[in-house]
Amino acid sequence: MDAVLAVITAAAQVLAQEASGITGSLNVVGYGLATLGPGLGIGILAGNAVQAMARQPEAAGMVRTTMFLGIAFTEALALIGFVLFFLG
Image (cartoon, rainbow, N blue to C red; front, side, top):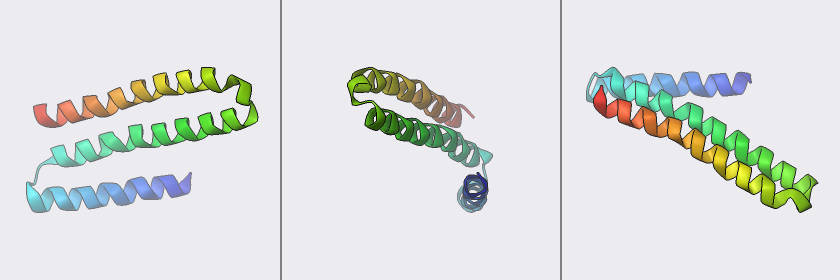
């Protein structure tokens, strides 16, 4: 968990430097942070789905369907962040 927080902190610092150097706008930082959550969520979701399929191969179809639904809902958060980036 500490490694994840360190990565998020480092990414926020890099995005802040890029924002001040390119446009000076906080929108870039906001969009960058908006993509971290869905990225982590999809990674965790896919990893757990692979583990579930490896443990119970007979339930792979149901797990795969549920995984794709979860990915779609998580990706919607990234799209909302992308739209807010242009609106801001």
